[in-house]
Amino acid sequence: MANKYCMMLALAIGLGSGIAQAAEVGETLAKENSCLSCHNVDRRVVGPAYKDVAKKYKGDSGAAARLAIKVRNGGKGVWGQVPMPPQTKVSDADLKTIIAWVLTR
Figure 1 (cartoon, rainbow, N blue to C red):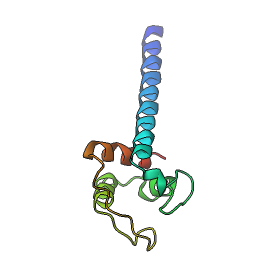
Figure 2: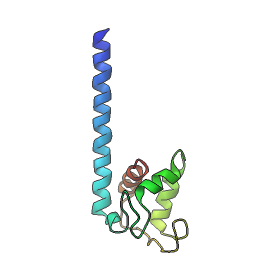
Figure 3: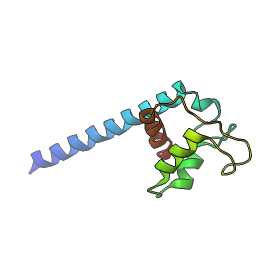
């Protein structure tokens, strides 16, 4: 029985490590794609703080897909009148990773 619990603990630690690595990748991609020029995790810069975005969309299963469209096409009005320019150079895979990271802030 003890081995079963040890295996479960090891799995939980491994999953936690994987989550931390995924978060690190998301943050790195956000930096590499200049997202942090206009955004910050904890405070508004030009665009909203990522923690505010995560809070707004918490529990919304369709948020990631809608945010991907919004980031790709740009827009304004949701967070104020300063427009977000279209982000066309970010790959779809990187965009998905960045948005997943933002939504976990």
